[in-house]
Length: 72
Image (cartoon, rainbow, N blue to C red; front, side, top):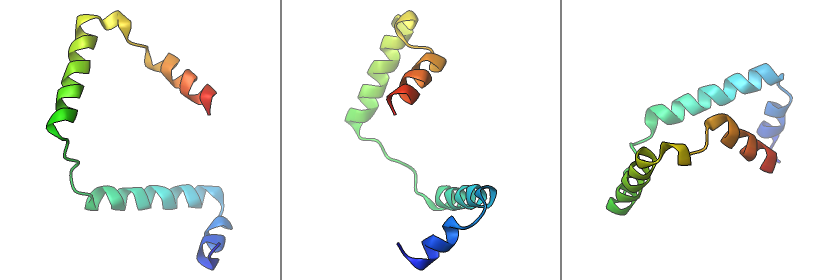
């Protein structure tokens, strides 16, 4: 592990969280937009149409989140 990473690990957790937030913000500012392929757009449209046709077939976020967290 590099010395600078070791130094960062010694920072208090609130400072490390702030550092991560600042770093993420800088990436978001500089990142170019994500370009989807025609196939990806078509797939997203297909999924949205399916959900709109049968909204009860979806899983509520709070349940999906619990499943995701339980699988980690």
